[in-house]
Length: 186
Image (cartoon, rainbow, N blue to C red; front, side):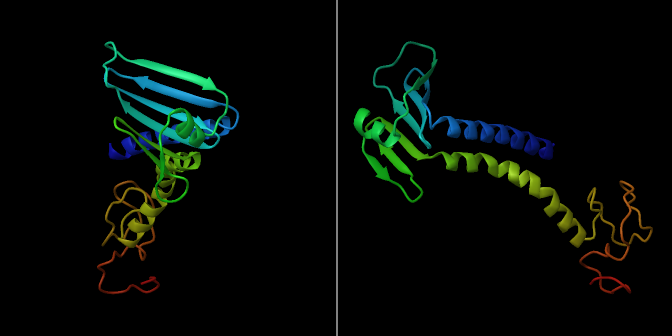
């Protein structure tokens, strides 16, 4: 069950990574703004010229009940200039790689390059592709079946009793074997 959940999360992450790449490519031509307005706060994502701005604001006056989504496409603009000029906030450099923090009395935000979002979304799918190879290697070192993980220590038949996969009898001795068989690697 955990593995299926992990695979599902990897697929969702891969789709979000593909959408991030599409936004990254699109951000050179237009500025996209997607916002969600709630009763006491709003969250907005801006994407323009290779940068992403996540911006959250607490609203001093509550909005009418309910929530609303906003999507606008505007002319391409530098998000750094937009934050300083139009929104009148200061940018505080935060670490390396173009990260900036935005703070205000009821607002905060984070400005970062698009590639950070893309890399972040592709970490889980990359791990999902590498994990089976790592798992097989560890199973082989522990004397388990490479397919199902069944402990093959002491099995001399050459076939896994759990799944029927053939295996090398000498390689399946396990890490706690005290004697070496002729021809074994250990």
